[in-house]
Length: 226
Image 1 (spheres, rainbow, N blue to C red):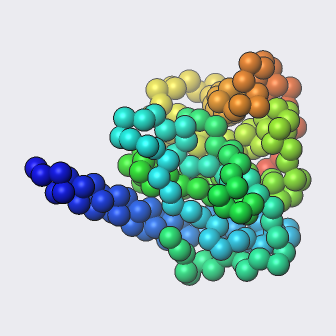
Image 2 (tube, rainbow, N blue to C red):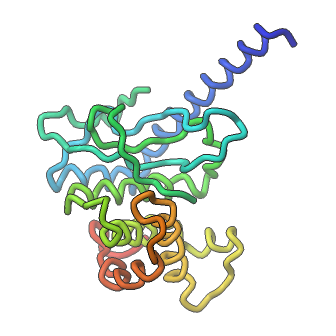
Image 3 (cartoon, one colour):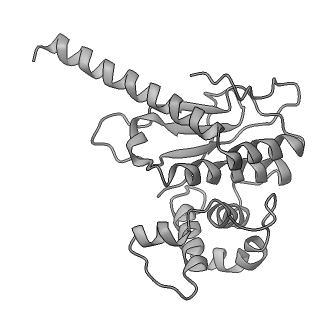
């Protein structure tokens, strides 16, 4: 294959990845739980910037290890922003990032070059996890430099997104029955803190344990866990 053909093929693959990511977002917006979460964030006073969901490449090469497959982007909800138009969308690691690239506006970043990591079963939980972070950020203005507050946010996101359901834990090879759901929440929250530059080197398992009961019992905006 010539160099020009190889370049063209790579460009086509990148464009297809972007199109797949856009299609993925449109599919998520049709899900009742996703629509509910978006509505709840706006209901408590945080109009969503447009675009709120963003597709970007996260890896430099195909051999790079991704730091995350999706992330909540820190930013300031601005009441003067146009709300998200749900019908017109534009173009296991730490998932809280801060970047000036998005001009200080919050959102959910999806890594279009690792979209194959989203299975049909997992895709909703990936997006819900980040939307719960957005809800908490709007509701409580989370201090993401506090390991305690970050632990609480990760406990809530892991327990409310559905990612610790029996089916997902079985796929991960975690077959325990007694207390498995809580163990999963604690494990995934601890892993998130371990990958955070803010909390590296801290006793994150202890922090999660200290924050667990209070944050686990907080199921807002749901009446009960899904």
